[in-house]
Length: 387
Image (cartoon, rainbow, N blue to C red; front, top):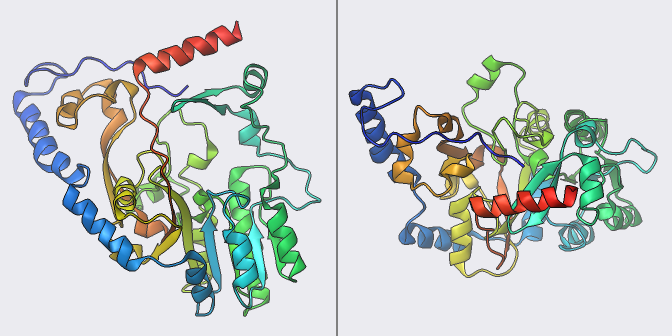
């Protein structure tokens, strides 16, 4: 289970502890209360209504949007998938209705490729969903033995795209298999290479690419500390703390969406599916609130994020469980403690990584943050299962 170290007690009074002078504490407090908290607070009722009005006025049908893109200068539409094709028929509808579709690229292995899962997924820890918003990381053998009904074998074939592939082949549409290599990094590089080679061979070819949401982000990655520091924005959908083990949260890896937009400037559009209001935890909270307030119930899409109210998501990030119930206004007291590395203002520039989003309004709410007591109960239950 991912937890921060125990957090020392906060500074209750200005001028005590951590070697910080009273004047420095006043500066920290003023900066936090006057600059950070007001700017990073959740949207007001009026802001949510403005966002909801924007959605109602600018929404488009997902299939209609993708079709119109591919009839213009766009040759490739990337759709970051969170919805199983068996649950949502968007890929099938595109194959049936979008004219002059030459290829689809799917995040699946070629039938003749017996490589199995990624090395990191097999060697690292696996995440088991224990319910009630509680997830626990543990070794594969342990998860398989203790929670066999919840365990996901990284070597198991994913049949999610079987019907989509068959449907595409039945219409004479070429299928590119982009799940290649033995590591997550390999796959993202080789996927971009596969699609690039196909599009260069046929300069008129148009198609869709169905990767995970991570690979659909136009994220450049970096190979050195200097390159990382030169980036002007941070990647969303990441877990930035020392206990993170999921390779998909490795910010250094370049995503294929970025490579493809560089290879074919002006010819690639990157979209992603989001189920709202559940969303991705605390990610994109303002969009989630606007979807809930819009009253829209059917799938829809919006594009041009840079000109929307949702281009930038600001939030106060809490990476330490012990800080989950500390009010925003009191977090300044934890500067200078071990907790300092686990909280702070976070800004996400969605317009830098996506051109648009396909939204699935949902009545499913965001799981509440587990309390210390619930985490302890889950831990004790896990220990009992082991014994």
